[in-house]
Image (tube, rainbow over all chains, first blue to last red; front, side, top):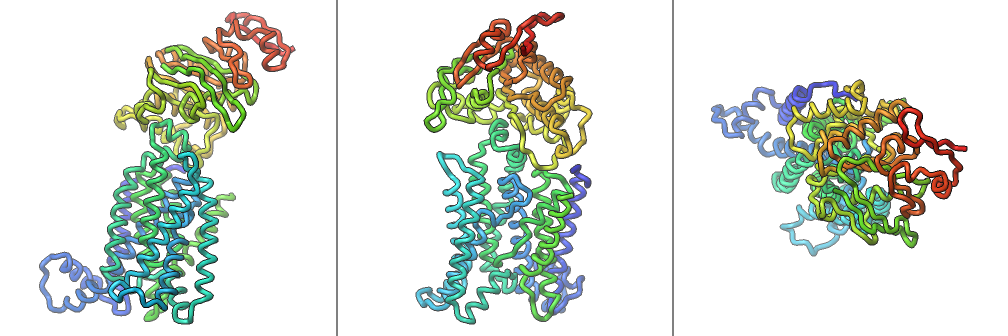
Amino acid sequence: MKPVVHHRLLLSALGLLLLLAIWLSLALGPVSLPLSETLRAGLRLLGVPLDGESLERAELIIGQIRLPRTLLGLAVGAVLALTGVSMQGLFRNPLADPGLVGVSSGAALGAAFAIVLGATSTAVPPVFAPYLLSASAFAGGLLVTSMVFRLGRRDGQTSVATMLLAGLALTALSGAVIGLLTYLADDATLRSLTFWNLGSLNGASYARLWPLLLVATAVALWLPRRARALNALLLGESEARHLGFDVERLKRELVLCTALGVGAAVAAAGMIGFIGLVVPHLVRLLVGPDHRILLPASLLAGASLLLFSDLLARLLLAPAELPIGIVTALLGAPFFLYLLLRGRG
Amino acid sequence: MLRAENLTLKRGSSVVLSGIDLQLQPGEVLGVLGPNGAGKSTLLAALCGELLPSAGTVSLDGLALADWQGPLRAQRLAVLPQNSTLGFAFSVESVVAMGRLPHASGARLDADIVAQALQAADAAHLCGRNYLQLSGGERQRVHLARVLAQLWPGQHGQVLLLDEPTSMLDPLHQHTTLQAVRAVAASGCAVLVVLHDLNLAARYCDRLLLLANGKTQALASPQQVLQPALLESVFGLQVLVQSHPELGHPLVIAR
């Protein structure tokens, strides 16, 4: 498909869309703030000296509740979209998903352990209790992904096809263990387990945010440096080697970025599906498969889509809140089917 | 200069290549012939470092292939595989421009080179098209343009390895492709090309390597290699060999 939109124009448009998403995400909620007040309070939080007593309430709501939530959404959306691009590049298949290398199921397994066993165990000092879930999810994701990667290696070469199958097998295995833990859980833990699996940006705090922001920044800075290598990889692994790229190293880096990125995202916000699959696909339709533009555009689009999904999640049933995973799946699954049917001609 | 010494390659317990000695000369086109499963593609994979030899060495300018730095090697050695599995909707120019990835020659020069390489592969009219909408033969020519762009304009010390570059082409483009290959060789680049068509090989190659069961059966000029007895022993096909009425090169006709 020919790139139908001029690249710079599209990036600017996506940038504006993201700014709009951030603005709305700061303004809307159970207590809706006027857009102008949101803007002024936001500027004051950034250190712009604006006077006005009336801004204090807005500043409090934004600074304490909505800004961390918005930043969380932004980072999660960006990371899921970027790792989606890198997995589709690694597997050379536009239908690949970051979960293929086992990171999502591993993180879910880690989280399930933390929720079910953490509820009954007293071994964890209370200071660490809030971090137990995130840390356990992150560790679970890394662990399962590294196992998938090891299973895919043979004689110093990584077979992407074997990794794919190993990912499927370990995902099934994780699912079985999660099922077992679910079976053992009592009603209260069952509920938190279920909610965690549906994903949510609710209860975002700066303490839970900074590890993800760190990882997201690293991934967002690193992957674009590999854009040319990813392009060459789409030709084929040996073709990329003949063009001078160290393909084994590239594969390691892509898996590592995905394990860290998705691990941190899932640890911070639970399971949020379809962003990593749908966003790169959608952006590719607009700009073509060149990773030099696909990566930054997917970052912006992923962050925007997640923020808008979160807005729906908190506004549709206000004051109650829908888990965001439900919203992204509701938007993503029909779109995925549309892509499949369209591809069939 | 690409050189293979006593190149031997085993897959499991079976010997796929054994004791191949080969030296590609600057400016020559060396054709590799042989029946299916003779080891032609394996030879090509071993010569470009994709497969590691069980014994023997492959060296480029006296340095083992594995010791070359990736981008430097890519500026010297380009490979066209038998078929491509690219499944993403790049434009034709973007595919060809990937041949310029090992170079830091700047966008403007790269665009010039891409245009010239497309011209050389007789694919200039495909500019702007979506790669996925091309026919098999058109895709093959686009990839030829890509490897031509990688070595453009061709010079002494470079090596181009082609695995059946004409397998999907119509008769006209079989000839234009091999003429483009000859033009690259004329600039000093050494070319190794795997072919099935004996007459194309006779017409465009300076030397022919005849492989069977992973062993060299003959390595000499087309006149010396394309002998009825030799061809019958290797291919099991009875042939007449005459000379081309206008050009004089051997012409192989099945009996």
